[in-house]
Image 1 (cartoon, one colour):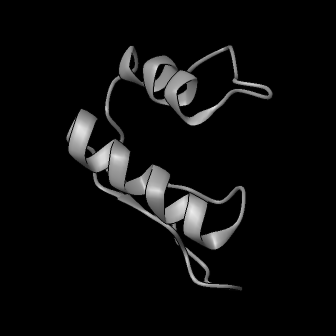
Image 2 (tube, one colour; image 1 turned 180 degrees about the vertical axis):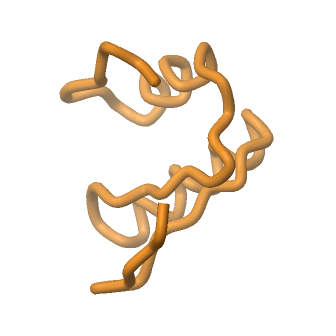
Length: 63
């Protein structure tokens, strides 16, 4: 859990910001255009070793 959030950051800043956090079981990228979201999810996987996905439109996930 974090008490801060990222606002108006580019992908490099988002990855840097998230790198200081404990990896979640799964990171759901739900903001931005689909292609950009998948690119960010790929970076989270490649650079941080996270399980990152982009949910399908209207997909529900039990947390």
